[in-house]
Image (tube, rainbow, N blue to C red; front, side, top):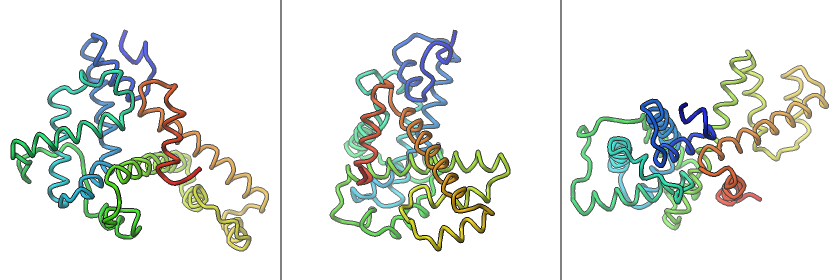
Length: 251
């Protein structure tokens, strides 16, 4: 029986359990795939953290690619023990360790010397960062660790919205979702704008209210599912959820 058949099927729990349970090749492959998927989702948090620590765009991108390659090549799954129950904490501490070692050895990764592990659109990230002012790496007073937490939270939100969009598009309701999506995080109750939105969707005001309520409920549920994918123990999901709200400055 593989890991998927006997253990909780969250991405991080699969990675952690593969490191403490002797499994077959399929177990290890499943754990590696889960680790790759998690890293592909959360690289912006690491990139923003390195940029805020003074690294250039090129250095940050190269360090992340080198870090991920090292993480996968040296089979770090075995190091992901239960004491590192949150993927966020594991990745944060592992990156710091990797960067420190690179500095001590003075062998920072050079462009072209490392095979890219994931697609990193650093330019788009930096452009988006400038558009939000003091929330991003342009704020010289921002704490790198706090920026890492905030970017991690935003990664969770982007992942959740992207998955919902794909689901709606698969149902032929992509345009519907595009119009309702801004209401997921908006507190706007302006009557004229909602009246126009209802007209665009061919709904009554009451039907629009119900549609927004249902979408928000689904969004919250999926966001919590995304949080659960980054903890080894399901009991930690509540605390990680509170951290998410704190990182975004919401209550």
